[in-house]
Length: 114
Image (cartoon, rainbow, N blue to C red):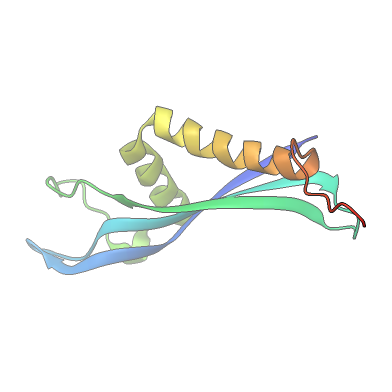
């Protein structure tokens, strides 16, 4: 089973001003989605996701990038950096394990007939 993992960090909270800068991102709302190439019985790809928020360190704005010049890739990079590689790996592993559980469940619920 091949899995594609994507990060969505498009929703952010900003201070309208911080020092001399405007629209300073201090919190990122992230969604990590895992999509399998394995299809369910209805023909849809198995999917799972995890959501969270990450606070960014804005104590040093010397290399500040104006909001209008930011890309989604910039924000993903900042988010992963603030989380640290261990937490990033844990989040990605978690969605992949949940996806695997959908594809090959380790438990099922059955009903006994009369």
